[in-house]
Amino acid sequence: MGVRHPHKPSEYPSFILYLLDKTHLTVTAATTIYVLYQRRAHPLYFGIGAILSSISAKLVKHFIRDPRPPPASSISSPVRPKRTYGMPSTHSTVLTFFLAYLLPQSPTFTHPYIYGTSIAAYWAAGVWSRTKLGYHTWPQCLGGIFFGAALAWGWNSLWIGQPSLEGNIQTLIDLMLSPLGLSN
Image (cartoon, rainbow, N blue to C red; front, side):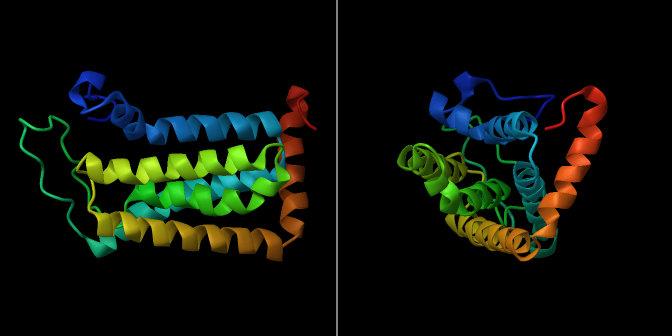
């Protein structure tokens, strides 16, 4: 498990569950590419919020100290649970942060129904996979859902309530990218 001992796709009940178990990599890579491509304040601000939601969930786990579900027998599932605490589910927290932050903005995109449906479907599959793989209980996933929604609401409220954030962040982006000839 992890970078040193990753599970092989053949060890999972299905290839879909294997892909969903790698959500942390795919979502991080997609967000990073989007932020670097856009070079605008709001995508960077959103990306920072997503990182902070992950860190926050991991910190809260150490205060709640709710154990993960017991491992399934090795006969039925060779995928072993993680050794950290389970409440709230970090994946559920971050996926819900994405859903709750981005879904209200979907009407501004070219194909809002496709965009909104895709985000909601990926969110639902990601949360479901955490219980299916035995990493979390449903209450732990629900804890992550509520925590992620609260973090997204707070992070978006800060963006809306502090209009100067956009200009300040954009100035920093331009200062960092101008020596490379990449500023907007």
